[in-house]
Image (cartoon, rainbow, N blue to C red):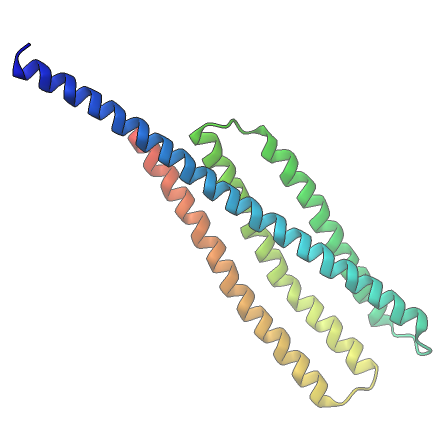
Length: 190
């Protein structure tokens, strides 16, 4: 064989090998991103279900053991139960939808984007959920005749939680944007 023929064989073997290696690495990277997005969604849902469920139980216990009835406590308990139900229903939908993807690079990337979109929507809903919860909590405390400084502390706490939840929401937004950019790059390459 001549040198040029050997070089062509060498180049074709190297290109094939590098391409296969890159595809494997890409698939693992996307699989990792998908698993991370799924883990974040699962953890968020379970924590929100736990917090809302425990809060409802506490409110019901306080309502049952309190001599003075407070309508705002009933409303708050009902609101938190509704939030827990909303999270549970959306969790079941997310799990059902996630079973419809193939296990290819493209399918895993689409699933990772689904999880990221879901988490973005969940964080947005829970961020705006802070406002009615803050209002109801402040009304419960005000109706109970607590000092003004307790209202101020609670208001500060909820304002801080709203700001922090905005920061968290931006993290989820950036993660989804990164996945969408990766999807666009892969579609251009194909």
